[in-house]
Amino acid sequence: MSKRRKGKIRKGILVNGAVICIAVAAISLSLIPDLAAQGEGASVNVTVNAPEYVSGTFDASIDVDSITGFNSGQFDLTFDSDVVNVNVVADGMLDSEMIPVDSWEFVDNDTIRVILEVSGIAGVNGSGNLATICFDVVGNGGEKSVLSIANGMLVDTEAEEIPTEWIDGHVTVGPVKVEVNAPALVEIGGSFEASIDIDSIANFNSGQFDLSFDSSIVNVTDVADGILDGETIPVDSWEFVDEGTIRVILEVSGIAGVNGSGNLATISFEVVGMGGDRSVLDIDNGMLVNTEAEAVHAEWFDDNVIAGPVKVEVNAPETAKAGETFVASIDVANIADFTIGLFDLSFNSSVVNVTEVANGKLDGETIPVDMWEFVDKDTIRVLLYHNVSAITSVSGTGNLATISFEVVGKSGDESALDLSNGMLANNEADEIPAQWIDDQVTIGE
Figure 1 (cartoon, rainbow, N blue to C red):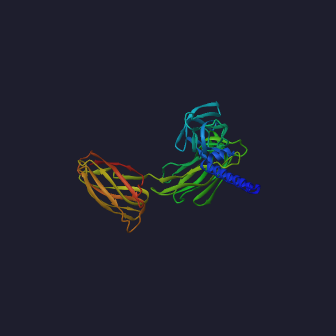
Figure 2 (figure 1 turned 120 degrees about the horizontal axis):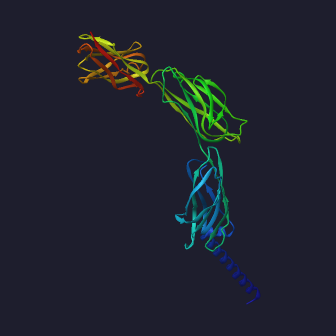
Figure 3 (figure 1 turned 60 degrees about the horizontal axis):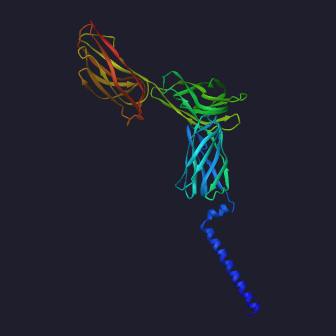
């Protein structure tokens, strides 16, 4: 065979061998991509995964992506213990395989060290988390803490360190709760105050909010400074945006910042509506700012007020003559949108007795007595129903019904006229708060 022919054969063998080696290597790497990646120096990401805003208690997981052959590891986690604090560290999990926390301890007030150990297991592959850390929130709203992971090391089943990138997390205490706090019932023709309450805010410096209301029911007369844990929160200015909305500006610049709970402002109202009228006190367009000129995340909560209670009162003569008759009216003042109602009236039937129940009248509008009956010999039940198909509702002052009595007792006898089981409702089927006031009649000569 010629040298030239031999050279061609050798070259063919070398080429074929190189192709086979490349193919085997490619197949091997395709079967174990994670090992290939780790072998080439690609790092695993370990991330502190915590909620952006925290309150009460919360969990932070130490997440890991696509790790292969994991056997053991450790890390330190540092935090601001004036803001959050660790109460327990729980086992992790990678693709349904438990990652036991061998031990954990406080290195100092602000740092814990966590040791992970899965020795005796062939090694764990996959994604998931190395541990879950449970925290208590001890700071005020708006305070922040880095959850800094450091001094970390992950080791595989060959006792080799796995290249890792360690990524911190951040939490902010919040949202801060800002709530309109007003009495449920506000006196008809009277006044009341609503405070803008706030819970556990840190480094408060300035803020603003709008408060809207139904000006036909309540109206603002003044806005006074707030107070947080004994520190005054000055109202820089307030104004009417429109007849049903005020805007309040708060400013404590020049002060280092105010911490604590209390209220941002106190708002005085007069009640101009009728009994049963309702108004939302709607807080909106709010913003709170800390001493770093950062917005403090907040939740804003409205409140509601009802004008009332409506006074419903038995109005009877003080004395009635033996053997004669008298009339008692069921008076009501300043009621709004009345549609339906009922009440029981009790009396001493050996002294007086009901003979008739007639319709009532509110500001000239008839209130029909739909029915009345004796519940027992000493009590009648009266049902009132205003025909809403004709008129939506009735508002005003007057009486719900007029009740006629005959006197059957003798001189000196007395009988209470006792209202009970009363209920009034408006055209929205909402109950109208009411105060039911009894009366008494004495039999004279």
